[in-house]
Length: 416
Ligand code: SF4
Image (spheres, rainbow, N blue to C red):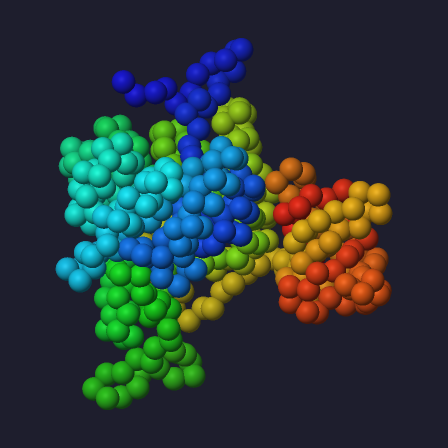
């Protein structure tokens, strides 16, 4: 019997089946940020058998550390093992899965049926999530994977809301659905552009993102594009379903996935904390929830490409494509991360991430506090000398602040 999605408690309807917020993490630092800024679960890639080979994947020793940190904060760790296996990739898979199991990971994300079978034979309790790489888009395919013994299906990004709703009504397993991040111009990952253009296999972790390169258009040897029609890309806009979160919660989607293991800590902190606040506020009082501009404004403080709602309404058109747009629209610039705080002196030790100077207005944001603004009045370098500007990447500096800060708080420079 399915769990109810909402209940009346003390005369008020509340959501009792809150979706998991699942965040990406390309390395240990990003994982800690995702956990601290509100993720219920994180997904990471191992050094082997994972896509996104450039996403600074984790060796086993770091996976163990990641699991310890995440579990100590009540957060789960899912590890991607979602390459499409060729015969030459078979060696070492058993040993790798055994090491993941021993490390205490909560689930593995798998595309190849062989890996699913090996994992279940090693440990029947091994939690298996079917990767979006399988392009699962219908209820019968979900049932098929359930019969194989998997625990969750990550639907293809091409699943419309109407399809999702009917899958949710019948699904015998958990359903994970993408809510934010990059899209492929082909069925998720089932793409050979990168193989043809750069000899890098998108389905074995090597996608060179050839869809985002710029192309000229030729017909019979004649170039068709000119200065009125510059070179174009085939890239899709990113997906952003912030306006649809209420609908997705009300049909009981089990997990909301944010894409982006290559993204910065600023992006991860901003996107995770925004969806965290939105989901919590909606679940607490869904019938009186008002979708304010606050959530969208927060989201676009981090670097985002132009966004659309992908296949949510069933299809996409030319407005959901980038063509020749190169859009990153951050409304604010990430400038520092707090690494220590001296309460008596009200001085924060910060790690410089982008240029800032005395006189700049900055906004601190944090998993614990509302956003707070202040003007920078003093910056000191490691020799305790006052300096006017912070222009060395990753330099540790001291700044005088107007309010207490915590380690892992971050600041953005407000654009005038
Ligand atoms: S080249 Fe583009 S469409 Fe193809 S797998 Fe890579 S990101 Fe996706």
